[in-house]
Length: 355
Image (spheres, rainbow, N blue to C red):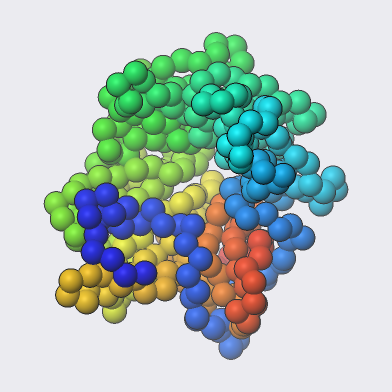
């Protein structure tokens, strides 16, 4: 991809919010024994958004001129999550965004023309519409983190529970993106990653540095585990995928493009063992524009640092994107074998740990 970044594109590039790109990464796996086995899931959904330890997978895609959500597992197969009603050409949608260990699902779906709200699907398959806000994260207790749109077009972070309904969490232009089983929430306030701990205030996590494209300084949180450790992405001169803990603060996890003129990374998910997954991106400076080089999916642990997943899977496999990681150290990803069509796969550690 070649472009001269304007301010919006510079920000997107700087925080590497490009995880949906399907650019081929032509790195062969190692000749020896791979660290991960690759298991192809028998599903064909355009957009896969998550899974749980039971390997129940959520996704969405077009069907009969509308966008519908899906829940798939090996026992029941594919179960539909439809929008409410049908109106206009492909304007009705249902997008599942998170799933907990019970198989409960949250997301957003259209309720009528121009109306979108959060939904909760319980383990029996019943769908409940929760109101006019965007659901982002779900924990195992059924608590939902999200955001609603204010009249001034800023966003307000919210928490929804069955007992209290929707509660505003405060913070200017805030969003709640993920919630752990202790009720701690990861999100952002005024363009900075932040954590809400239930005492009524947001703790901003800071930034790693300025963007290599301009003076922008922004960060966003993407996931939080039950220890309260947060991963996300920050502007930085290089890298940008971060891990934040109360003891270490925000640390840059690095990148996988040492030869590129601009090398950035994106932290996507973390499990309770502290294993982080994400994407690394690079750009070459051609003078008047930047050309993107193939991105690489990574896994990071405190012991190993950042490793390219292409180097950890059997030869012939190419890992395009990582989507989620569970507490069994399984990684949901899209990959292809010998440059054939991309498939949804689960990467499972061969020896139970990375070497």
